[in-house]
Amino acid sequence: MKNRCKHEIIADILKLCNKKEATVTEIVKECSLAGIQAKYFLSLLTENGLLIRTKLKHSRAITHRTTEKGKEYLKKLEQLTSILPS
Image (spheres, rainbow, N blue to C red):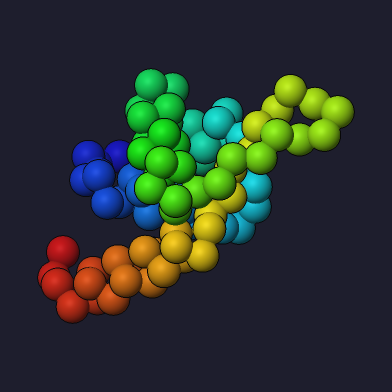
């Protein structure tokens, strides 16, 4: 796998959490991140309102899902990447 820039990693996380509410473990596996990377990006995205954390009832699990602000970020990022060559 090639090295990804910060925006590509953020996009991968937001896309996954837009499809389904994802746990840290799912994000680590499906986005090919180390645990420390996942925690950094999840904190960054949550603090900036792009993700929301939810504690599941009757469980210790915490899930993440993309907010409307996160969806807007994804849309704008896709517009930019379609303009600029890779």
